[in-house]
Image 1 (cartoon, rainbow, N blue to C red):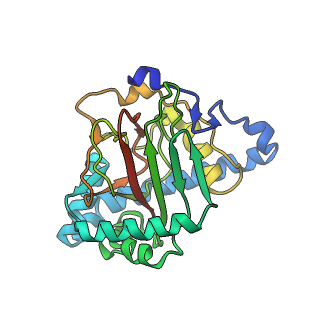
Image 2 (tube, one colour):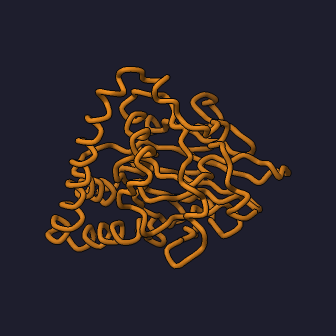
Length: 275
């Protein structure tokens, strides 16, 4: 399946036909628009400070991560978790999944389990000082990660729907996510595709950022925008397929434009820490 025929109007089952902001917000839109513009400007100033000034007085490890996030959108650490830890976490997840049937999204071979923070072993697993400090110095915010677990399997359907298969960024602001695969991620089982020079503010995608801001602040329920062409992620020197072995991790800035590629064979299992 090529990038061209991946171009679709769905994120899972959510139809990406654009938000009708006048209908959804009415007169509130007049007041919210200038607030967003001011907020976005302050966000950009903050990230100039953290990425180009503050970074050079930080400990070397944190500095290296932030410079890589700034320049490439991600930082990969091989064999961060030993196999014994991954096996233990898999057992914890398996036991949890048996008893908890709610708070999940299921679609065409994909199951996404949300809100796993109440599982104590997982919380300890995610509560790494490296992640927390990187997030603090990169965003100037402290937050506990939200934990999710995603399983994707190939099904015999050429029209298989996928979550996040459209070119997108997760938020109007730069945020940290940590990706921990519990299975190897190869070119055939849905590696994420990321454009390494897309973390700055694109004025032509202004509406996309604005809608993201509205959703994050609960003014609208869903982001249905899809105005970033998937061809933006066509293979070139700036496009990276994030291939990983189980136990590796990737720390990445989710404002960089990315997409999930289709799964051709096997299955893909990933734990996500959202900061």
